[in-house]
Image (tube, rainbow, N blue to C red; front, side):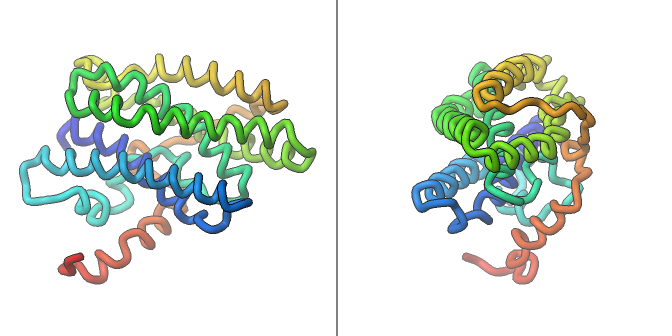
Length: 249
């Protein structure tokens, strides 16, 4: 696969799968305003994903669209990190997953603004304002939950303990990441990780929360090796296009 295309897909797949997870939570928010906020974040992410998929579809010069890259790929051809496919077990889990990912996105897209690839640079400029809002919102919720009631603190700490094992994969460099970084089109994940850790530690300190003692890590999503949850996501997402492949909308 073309290097630039796979790099695009890594970005788009993260946004798409997290957007799908958030859309599953629609109408289940703790109150109406927060339910709308969650839905708006999902819409922002699907907007990012759509623009990247459309650009990726043009690379091969074939008569394909971004929809083909969403609905015509199997599980092993998706390159999102394992974090974003984790299920919505409770509100604390949703916000911890969001906070970890928002912080990654913020520092990743901040660096992407300087990309030598015109499309990626423009994507960074267009997306950073929305992503900054996402991070501010999830950071505020981390503080509110961690520094709130005893139950809220315990649930949030448990979510951190469960999800921390998926964080290293954000910064796990593969050949595509290294190639894109070397030619100035991609970003340095080492730089992103340093900034990410500062933000994570800052917010956890303010939240009366802490990093887990068990630092065991899991990865594989960027290689197309996913958790058991990914197949169920794609089964639901791709149901209609698979059942009616010739349908037009």
